[in-house]
Length: 260
Image 1 (cartoon, one colour):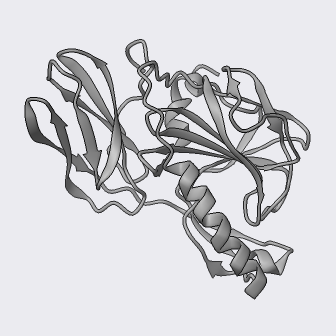
Image 2 (tube, helix red, strand yellow; image 1 turned 45 degrees about the vertical axis):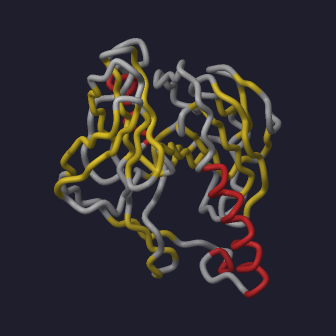
């Protein structure tokens, strides 16, 4: 990691992130795929922090920027990455094939979840110096092509950390709680806004210890590990979102993990 923000190194692959240097005196606004992108730094040395979707095609991509000087675009390349497959057995069949009432609930919840993912809080002091939210073994990596009871589902959009039920989950960096709820698939869930479209999500909790609107600090306890929602056992599902895009949480604790 580099600089005071602790920005992770580039990982210009689907599900990764790329840092683009913007040499403008005035802080610009930036967009990628019509979604606003984080810009941090200082005059003459701004950085756009771009999350890359899991379904991004390889090749040239572009961000667009705008300030009082006008408009410009910057290119970056996305390289190929092949993610492995994972086959899981879920006992609750409705968590694989929901019934009509379940689907109505799921659709309602999807709108709420998308609103949380797209939240934007325009602050300058965004920190990427994350701590791993719970002590435990990583049981499922980000990006796995998933099959539940033999049926293909969306790729894994987070990091699963196996831990004992009731183990404390810590806030990885300063932020604000923007959503807490019990969801059909995600179980008890907390969303934290860290600023400029950097959002973290914590799923399957047995207990939630924070409230919406609460300001929280790095290291605070936000809840407890559980097995609510679609699970095969007690664990934390942890997601990191940049410009409304799920990216690999391991990128944010890479330096920490290498020191263990």
